[in-house]
Length: 325
Image (cartoon, rainbow, N blue to C red; front, side, top):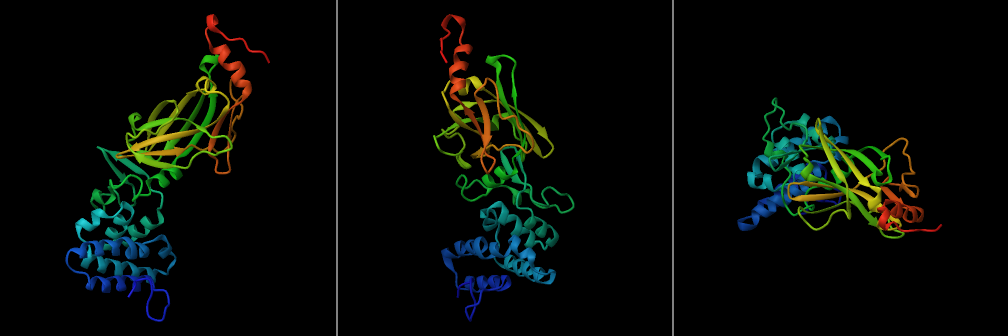
C-alpha cells in the first residue's frame, strides 16, 4: 500500500503516512533495506515535517511529532541521518530528540543564515550551538553532495542577500565607478570566497537566474569589480566597486551585476538586486545608467553617448581618438 493514500481512496493524514511508511519497511530486507529506509525519511517523513503541519492544532501537531519520533527510534541510523540534506536532517533529529519547541521553530525558519568555518558550511537553524540544548553541530552541516542539487543553498542565499546601496563615485573620468554594497547571510565569508562583477545581457534578454556550479569552475564575471568584505555579526558586508570605463570599453549594451559566493565545494552565482529607496539612475560619464526589472534585478546600461565620449577622453593624449557628434 502506498503511503500517499489509505483505504477508500482518501488522502492519508500525516500520522497515517508515517504509519504506512513503517508498514512498507516491514517488507524491506537485505541489501535494499537501507535505501528503502532513506527514501522513507526523504519523502514520507519529510512531507510530515513541513511548515504546512504548523497549521494543525497543538494536539494534532503533537501526534505528528511523536509518530515521527517513534519512526526514527526504530529506523534512523547515523548513516541515514548524515545522508539527509541539512534541512531534513535537523528536522528529523529534533523530532527524534522530542525537542518539539525547537522543531517547530526550525519548521518556521525557512531562510536560515550560514556559518563558513574551517572549510565546513553550517545552516543556522534553531538550536545550532545553543549550549542549553547541546545538539551535535554535524546535524546542521550542509552536505557536499552534487553541487546545487540536494541543498537549497542557492535559493536561501538569493533571498538572504540584502542590498544596502548603489552609488556612483569618482571625480575624474578615469576613476568613475559604480559602487554596490550588500549583506551576505554568511558569517565567516572571506574576500577569497567572494567575487562581484558584470555579465553582458543579450539584446532583449534579462539577467540570468541564480545558478550553482562546482567551485573553481570556468564561470565568472566578464568584468570583475574590486571587492571589500567586512564581518557584521552573523552576516558579511560586501562592497564592490566597478570601473565604468571597463564597461564602456565593451561598447553599448546592458550588464547584470552578479555576486559569486564560494561556499565549500560550490560557487553560487546570484543576480544582485536594486536596494529599496532612492537610487540615482544616471551615472558618470553621461550615457551610463542603472535600471531594474520587476524582480528588482539590477542592470547597468551603457548607451551610445557613453561610448562616443568616454573611451576617447580616457585614452592618453598621444593616442586620443577624435569623435564627431
